[in-house]
View: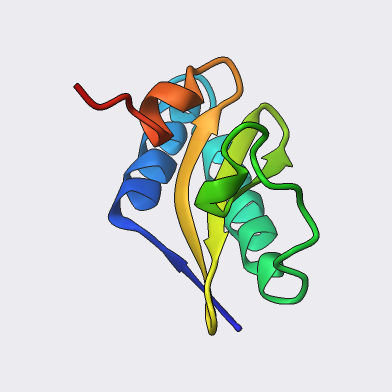
Length: 100
């Protein structure tokens, strides 16, 4: 199984790196490398992490990496990283916006 990052997830990674780099550019690089490596490990056990409570019907799962939450969906042949958000963010508003 392969791991793919959506454009939104790639933008999230860039934003996280930029934020950390304000205080510590070297740590920003190592943190992003660790985060991406952790995401890539999902290829081996994609269903190891729980579905997002109250949104199980969407198939979205959540992996914790430090203070960040990696939201992803398992497909037939790939793991799709949807977003990577800070745990303090309102992930429901980002991932499951209300219609209307």
